[in-house]
Length: 248
Ligand code: NAI
Image (cartoon, helix red, strand yellow):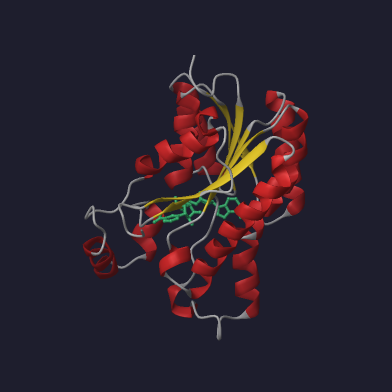
């Protein structure tokens, strides 16, 4: 018997990177996992890999920025697994560093970006909370970032929003026995960051991190599963930095 035996969990943005690590770890601890992502090809692969390792996982395509798509994800999960116990709002996109200034970013770009990185977490939470409450409660983890504390631009602004949303929703969901917390990873080595962050910036960031290395997706897993699990039964509205000491 493990912490998530018999529980169902949705992980958004689970087709690769940190989200895929969450999906694998939840399945390894007994959860029935919905690998939810825009990217069907990579998401199907993650679900297949989990199944081949003896876990339970299915892929469902979602666009978290679309409320109807979020509702369809919740309905799919209830139909497939009989309810929703856990949600990880992990999906996000990285901004174009070249236009990452609030005074000059084109409105269309800004709205699309916030639609995924901020509204996405709210859309999926609004879609799942009633089925979660109906089966006695549950827990949610939002993916923030230390960018909320150390970096401006609209990527950081969206993560400040995630922190505020986490704390406000902790009030709103507490009465339904739903806990909601956030993880704020420091710089983490994923396919995405390898593409968007130049090597010189990585070197500089690592120099300023007390533990002198980037994080890995597996570094995030322990914190996420702790906050989702009953081990954190009296923890809600908390933002947990997992960052090698980058921010303290
Ligand atoms: P990634 O780019 O590897 O994975 C993100 C996933 O989200 C992709 O599979 C992508 O297809 C999916 N996605 C994008 N838009 C979507 C949408 N509209 N609907 C559904 N799925 C969508 O990213 P990574 O690096 O694994 O980061 C995961 C999370 O962790 C993000 O929230 C990111 O902001 C956060 N984070 C990452 C850090 C890092 O250094 N890698 C540091 C701090 C936070």
